Length: 492
Image (cartoon, rainbow, N blue to C red):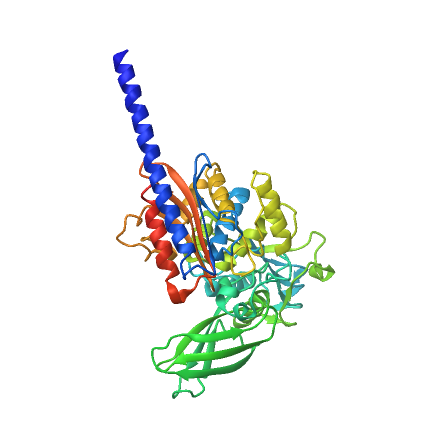
């Protein structure tokens, strides 16, 4: 009996001691947040922070956690969670090469179709055992030839109708769209809808010569206004274009020196696929009667010359698993992937195939999980839109809910480790936060944010979200201030 009483007393003392330490930690964090809020750095801006027990969902820190703030790329935590939860981590996208009509005497009386289903990774260079776009086109052209086809009395068509033809969220900025990170998410994507454009610098403030694009896009008009700056100044080029446009405008500066390349977004990847596959087929001696085209919406022309049973499959290309795709998205912060992850569940659950449909689908999916949506203004899946708004409370609620899902391990592993990997590899190095915190970063003009998970000293898993909006960089460094706050997390 005495032993029991002694153990009970020890347990109660430990509990009180633990509660006392937690209260002390909370006081220190809140004091730091108050100080930041009243400093010149954030006096005209705002900070929101939420920390919750991942297991219970109980608040530990709630500082302006119900204020709607622009989340930047931490929005990807929501879109990747939704995809994993609804589709499962083993889900694969599937792109098919098909033909309609009949093959008679080596002539296809019909069309060849490249039918997309939204795979953002098709032809990407990122994944082992997956063909890049050049290898994929070579393989497909060879499969067309293997059917004995020497002439196509029709055309090659890129079918992007899986998603709505309006591929750019309405609140994206004009200056982002033509650049690689502002690529639209089409029903048929290729090479992450990215092209390289190479310039040859000249003398200081002289025009930099246009050299080439890779992939080759000879059907696009290139309006080159790029000038040459001093050596070492880096990439200062902006590329302007919109989806389906037949011209790109290039402005800005490249540094003096050897040839210099920058990245842009392909305006119509479905058309490019049809064009490039046609070129590969012609190199193999296959004649094509009509020029390439893209199908953006399903219509009666899709099955022109079709057999009664529709189209015949020539080849199928599966994507890496969703687990791998989500990890690439969160590690490298790929906007295209996040937009696909927002829209795909909406299509497969028959909720619609546009961004606005997908946002409604997102709300329906998470409302069924008990998520309070107050304060959420979702405009895209990637966080590129400055009009996005979310509370840090919603962020940590989603992170907490995900711990109960079958796909949680895949989700957790997809979030980079501070000081170790992804976009946070150089953050808080050689501090106690390094290796302990899984954090997705977010950054657009006037916004810095981090969200994810950390393990407390007692071994319990916590989720967190910290967002700075409209800070004044003349009075501080947002990344450094956020780094300090994350180091404080590890004191819990």
